[in-house]
Each structure stands twice: as structure tokens, then as C-alpha cells.
Length: 179
Image 1 (cartoon, rainbow, N blue to C red):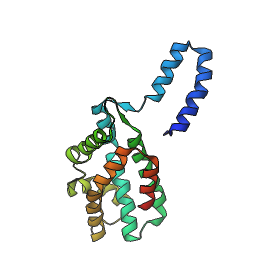
Image 2: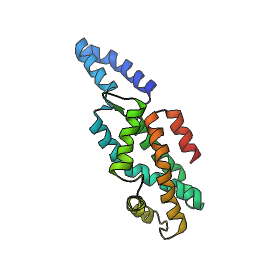
Image 3: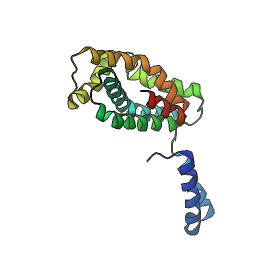
Image 4: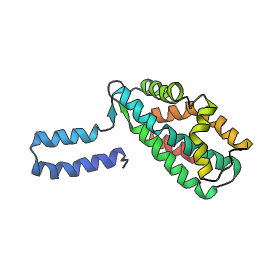
């Protein structure tokens, strides 16, 4: 379950009262600190967790782009956008443990998307990532639109990386709405 800052704060405040009734003050503070820091990771773990979501983000972005270009599967666009938004938001909420600057986050996410997975630069990698989902959704992979979707994704990766690195939920919502 992904919570925004206000939801997390409310949960912590309500837990604070209940926890203190059953735990010592030190134990409750340690527990609350763990809740607030649960999405702060060392660099390698941050990259691993971001990498775990690259396929889902790639697939959903490509499905939404396909629907936009072809006019097909419009009844599924809302679901694909919601899944895409959830995955991008999850990555955006993750923080780097020592240096969580925008530049450090961009560098780590570029390493995941471009250097390691090659989704941001290799059309064949994108094809292998999305092919079976497109077949499952009964979308033709032997046409010009499919090839354009792959090209569009590769061109969009720098923008997606920047949006995830920023971590701003309003920017993510605006981005998803425009797709």
C-alpha cells in the first residue's frame, strides 16, 4: 500500500497513542522511526528495487502509448494508466540513504534504465520486455504502430527518469494524465 506523506503522518500519530500504551517510549519511537524510514535504501538496494519495476513501467507505458497511437483498446487505458502511476509513484517515493539529491537519484535511475537494463537505448530489449504482454492483450506486434511505441519509449526514458527522480506526486499525476 502506497501512502502519501499526510496518510503516513496520520497513521503514525494514531499508532503513537496505541503503541505507547503497550510499549516503552523508546520502543515506540524506534517503531515509528522504522515506519517513516521504510523507503530509504542504500544505493544498491535502491537500484535493485527500481530495477524490479522497470518491466512493469515499460509494459504499461507501452500499452498506454499503443492505445493512444492506434485508438485501439481504449477500454483498458484507465487500468494501464493506474498501474503505470502506481509503479512510477512507488519508485518516486523511494529515497537514497546517504545522498538523496535530485542528481544522485537521476544518476541511479539512469544506471538502472539505460546502463544496466538497456531499456532506454536498445529497441530489442524493449521488444523482449513488452512482446508477451502485447500478445496476451491480443495486440499485433507486426505493424508500424508497435515499432513506433518502442521508439517512443526509448525517447521518453530520460523524461520518465527525471519525473521519478523528482518524486513530486503532482508532476507524476500530470504526466500520467497527458499520456
